[in-house]
Image (cartoon, rainbow, N blue to C red; front, side):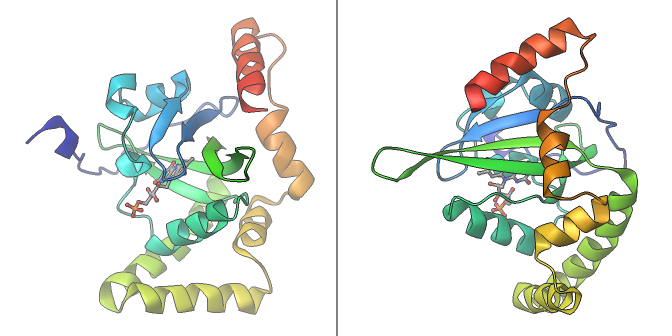
Length: 206
Ligand SMILES: Cc1cc2nc3c(=O)[nH]c(=O)nc-3n(C[C@H](O)[C@H](O)[C@H](O)COP(=O)(O)O)c2cc1C
């Protein structure tokens, strides 16, 4: 088996994230990784050379239903953000839950040149609830079909009168303004090192 084929076996062990840290990556328009910050590598356990040039599904967890990524890509192709709750898989098989925030960059002709993802630790109560939904979607996908799972997913959102993001923010009990500060106003003043890093990332990603 070449290193490229390596795929970890998922375990039930969780990686506890530092809620003050941001996990960042940048990809080309097709989701090929071009940059990952130190915390990204620390958490997923891959070295820089193992990540660069690889598809972002290198950290895809088998518990994630397809429909979430379908929706994510529909949004990204349109240059739209999506606040998704995602379970990711580390190199050693452990998992970690994140809340996502995306930004798309364009060239002068309006073509997408990169996608930037920021992720932060997701609160436990939201994970508990989304996990139930994802398990249902996955079971429908496996026992029926991805199309049936998709119909169920959109039926549920329609019943709630919400988009996926609204549903997620509702679980988190925050609004659009709250979620923005969740991602951008978190530097603990006392931690010089973290602030310095964040200053750098802010310049890179703004
Ligand atoms: C900027 C960016 C960040 C992404 N971050 C993640 C991530 O953290 N976890 C994940 O499973 N997929 C992430 N994806 C989506 C993957 O590209 C991929 O669609 C997903 O892992 C599902 O894999 P599949 O399309 O092979 O089924 C990201 C995509 C982009 C463009």
